[in-house]
Image (tube, rainbow, N blue to C red; front, side, top):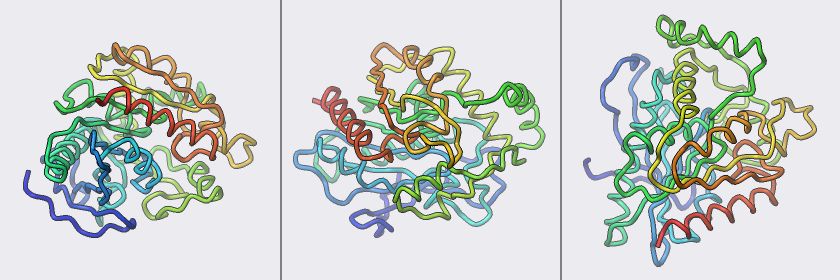
Length: 322
């Protein structure tokens, strides 16, 4: 990989670099594709590990407080905005569309390799890698960590992983036709719904770019649904991730409606029951964390559950990194 050209990022204290286009493949006819690596300029002393933060769907990296928590335990912190997302969204791109989970896995792999190489130059020695991934990014990171992990990977943190959706019986039945639809109309928007979850984050004071994390939602394509369904099926059958894994979620799932009295204190996006069922089958060293009162992105929860989550993240890094 060529030397990265770092430029001042939109976030204070951060820089960003274009990782370039992914390998050519099918389904890339929606404009140029790229990926963006973001780094926290300040490095801890001493540096103990590299941390890569991976976002979810209708999402991008903006949670600097999460980066700060990782830096507190000696991580040189990076994040990736994957193809068709956030800083990497280009004119003509269909936001967040994929045809296979390995597309996101490739973005994670390239970002991890670049982050590890850059950090080694900055601190003068090689460091182990920790990946913190959320939601769809966590689903992709799970498959990546099982199939082709970076050789430096020392631990995987999954924040509200997309291992299942809270579907009605009718919705579950309708999902059966999605793989067929995806073969013929992969870019067809199947779920155009808005995102009360994102609106709730705004109402609770989180600040982000609403062109990149949209309260009106991002329509889920048939390709994205089929890709994530196939990946969830693989996870449910069991994997063998060879490094320690922290699997974190809220204590319950509820409706994604602003009139839900627990909208700010439970997961309103993914099925936490599916996370429970899948966790033990991920590998030989899995730590399950359930945080009462947390939301889908545990790092964006209210003060108390967020503090409990970040404490657990720091403790996990301490456990897996010498």
